[in-house]
Amino acid sequence: MKRLWKTTASWNERNFGLVASEKGLVHVVLPHEWAHGAHPHRALPDDEERMTPFRQAFQSYFAGDLTIWDIALDMEGTPFQLAVWQALAAIPYGSVTTYGALAQSLGQPRAVRAVAAAVGKNPLPVVLPCHRVVGADQTLTGYRGGLMLKEQLLALEGVRGLSKRGHERFNF
Image (cartoon, rainbow, N blue to C red; front, side, top):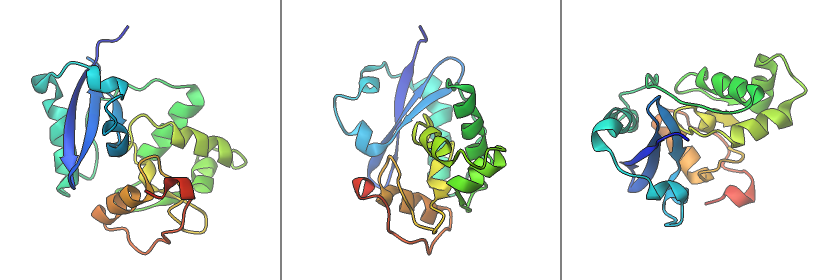
């Protein structure tokens, strides 16, 4: 079993939980998930020295100074999920793409729903920028962190003008 540590990075009065192993960042816990005291990663030990590079990278991103992530990652998933997550990593800072375009980039244009499911299971939101994926009609669509956070992350990167419509269950 992997040994894990945690810390938090704050932005706009919200805490993002950061979880890492000896190999790299394992999980980013979005603010509304982290706020629930029952989240399993909250019980992990803190190791400020080990976690400093991850926290500093997030602080640099939130300050607008980091546009390309260069931190160690420790990802686990199916081969398809890993391919989708690598495609997310290739979406440039300050731009958006669609689920259909991601499926096309993977050579599987008919796998849009499977791509969307893999995006929804992204263990490293923000680092693997699933917030940069929008609907074909340029709506914000769903986001595990809520549409308000998705819109704020995109605005931080200079992306504006997307429709605020999206799935109602993500309207927080």
